[in-house]
Image (cartoon, rainbow, N blue to C red):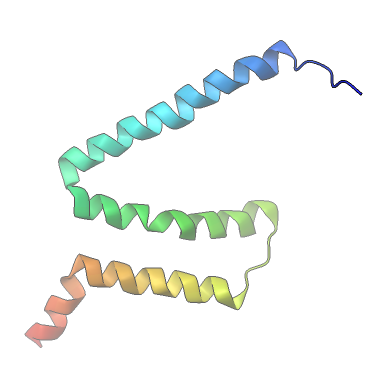
Length: 93
């Protein structure tokens, strides 16, 4: 059984998504890297799984399970350790 060919609109959507989603994202990524530095950029990339979980819950109606909270908490602790401001505050008190 042969599948029908995709429509022209569907075929044109592929390069459009590639240009907008990927190329623009990399341009933004490297501009932030240049201005904010690698450590600060890394802090932002750790938030991608958290935003994916929350968008999955909000948009797709996925269930928010205890393991998601544990993972988001672990990411939060990692971000606090990498950032260093929290450690400095604790040491200064």
